[in-house]
Length: 129
Length: 129
Image (cartoon, rainbow over all chains, first blue to last red; front, side, top):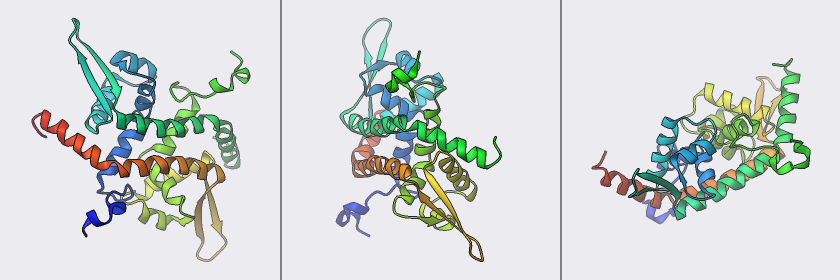
């Protein structure tokens, strides 16, 4: 199939082999979403990011940043200072992604009372756990 | 701090212990996002869902559905038929979440050319891999 004639079919996250699935996972994975959300507020250094994304290990944050940088969502800027200093910031595409992600995050934060109520009913119906 | 006075501070996904972080992970995790996206089109039986979310194992889909049901995003309806038949559908809250998620998914699918271009530049700059 010539995908250039059907741009609507070019990428599909539901298809196992589609590269968009990997990017969706980088963006929405456990740490990817929080990293993009944190950088939406402005550029941060590695250790600032680590404090903002509570609970992330140095190794996981480093892997997360590499994946987001490779996908063109995060820009890494090494400052020529002594000691060297590295800033991370969103690219224009990263800002567009982070905006949509934050819409989802803020929506969920605003509806957590409903979610916790549902969890309580679910657990009660199953004899608690 | 009395959180009832500051509803804006009640839930915060950046805080390690906040229950909203778990829900964000259920919604955006590898399989959660695709399951919600698939159910946004209408109710589906387990095996229909499994075919739609290409690559998911029976066990992972079952775990994913339980987490989403417990969070009040998916409703499980056992039909009193013989053989028994179980339908899964989004709750009203699930529909609102899935809508925001699909906005993000469709945006990413539409910008994958940019993402793949960035990956190529990244890999070339590092001597290929």
